[in-house]
Each structure stands twice: as C-alpha cells, then as structure tokens.
Amino acid sequence: MASVVELRQSERIQIDAPRLEALFRQMGDRAAEGFVMDSIEDISDRLAEIELATRIGALDDVPVKAERVVSLCNGIGLISLARVTGDLGAAAVRGDMIAYRAVWERLVRIGDRSLAQVWELPGLSL
Image 1: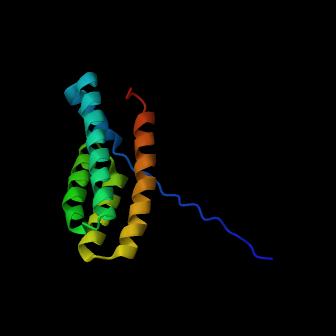
Image 2: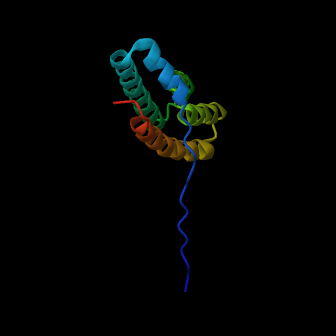
C-alpha cells in the first residue's frame, strides 16, 4: 500500500504596516484608501499581463512588467509580493522555465494572501 503525503506551502507574508499607516497619515483616509485600491487594481492588471505574456511565450516582456509590479507593491508596503515578483522577473531574464513556473505558483499564493492581509489590517477600511 502506498502512502500519499500532501505538502502545504506556508510562507510568512510581510506587509510594511508602518508604510501603509504613513500613507494614511499623509494622504488622509479617503485619499489613501483610493490610492491603495488603485495600486491593487494596477497590480492585478500587470499580473494579468504577465500571465498572458507567459501563455503566449513572450517572456521578454515579463521583466519590465514585473519591475512595475515590484514598484507598485513597494509603494503600498506589500513586501513579500514585491520580492516574489522580482524573483519572477529574474527567472524570466535567465530563461529558466522550471524556476519561472515554480515562482509563478508561489506568486499566486503570496498575492492572494498578501491582499487578504491588507484587508485585515487594523485601522484600514478597504
């Protein structure tokens, strides 16, 4: 009889809460919420572009798009998502499809969890 072991990926998600708090202090609640929401929408759009580039085999487009996502993530304190997106761009530059696919899967997990944690931060009413 064979045994099946299920491996669950678990990584700590890092969000720069002080960065978000500073945005809210500087911009005010309404403007900061708008900025964060716009940034998240832009991140989602860029990730969709990266996914399309991957499907059509246009990996040369990925590093520039990934760098834009990194910048957007850093702007709203999504540290883990920025780091993994940078790793994706690096794998694309190297043309390492095995690493690229693995990092993409990691990016999907980190992205979902990062966004969920942003919604749960105290004091934010996103």
